[in-house]
Length: 192
Image (cartoon, rainbow, N blue to C red; front, side, top):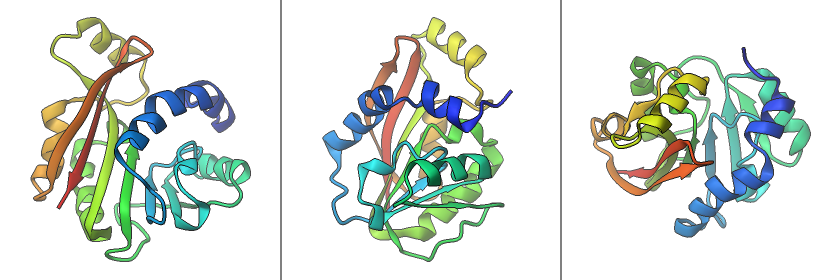
């Protein structure tokens, strides 16, 4: 069962957890001032506040979540997309954020999106990713994520990295951490 956007935003993406486990990690490594940001899988828009409204575009296939995001953050731009081609110009973004999205996408479809990311990034652009990840020495966390998370495609670190390496991205793992004691998280970047 999929949660309503309001319940999801309140319980899964409350401001304090988003700030602690996502925004603080990203701000330690990146400055988004005057940088064009694409938030792929923007959902309810919780990550838009990392940058100014005029530099942000949030995309998601779920029109209910996008409509919620537009109501919560009216100064930011959000759009619904369908299919594997994203409605943006070539070489148009400095950063692409992918926060807890890939584990909801079938692996064969991720390859199509990675090609799109490559097309959309500026030559010196970067993709910033945080994903739930199965860790070898975390059987309880792995079980918990597998049982409770609504994403059907949680993967191991090497699997996530390989999607990008196969398209000639250089990957850099910035951190492996636990969120709320039971979620294993992988934080990495991909650049050309």
